[in-house]
Length: 313
Image 1 (cartoon, rainbow, N blue to C red):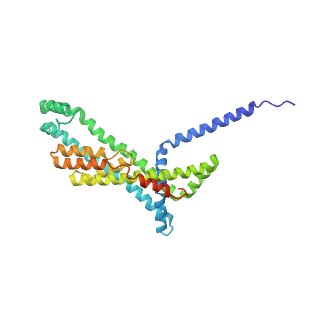
Image 2 (cartoon, helix red, strand yellow):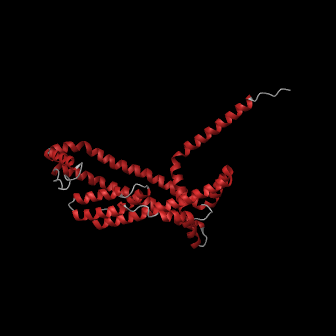
């Protein structure tokens, strides 16, 4: 008796695979806006899991209270700096309008003497400044008028993009709270899935990944905290306004591996532009010292990886 051709089985298998692929693609498309928050939440939970366990032990084994405290800490650490930045941007919208009006009525002030001496760009800035000053109040107003709406729109746009960032951070905190409450169950499911894929080696790789995440996060977080605190002290001592907000912004930039120089260098330029050369020089030297702080957390990260318990998270 002849064996029937497996064409029907092959077609059914292809359709099943195609259907599963469409389902996976649809799930990723739906979850795409939440994936960054999910990834950040996993990193935060894995990195701070020992803190949760110690906190839970001090609270008499109450996981709910420990999760609530950790969640409030994440809100204060992530959301508060962003809210301060938004309020600062909104407060400076009117200030920018007033500054533009003052330039239209009073003209440009004299250029500080140190600006033309800047390498590469000093002469160009001085030439442009002299052209604007020689145009008079009417000419200056005509040149600034097209840019007023752009500047205001930029401030509003920054506030809107920061609002989107706040939503992402809130999602991160919510997902982190869920993972905190059931971390053991989630970790056990991940390890069982890894063992199913690659046996004991897959389980070992998963545990090693958790240790690596914890060690790197500890090193980055410690360096970010030290750099932002030292940079904030320098800003406060030098008399830079809104030093608290700038310190919070520096911390977020350091966490994002962008460094505190984005805040410190403009602050130094602002001090020099306001004829505070002494404080500008002091902050410049202090900023160089702060920017050189790197790699100090490597021993801590290594020790965290080596001393981390085998149980994950």
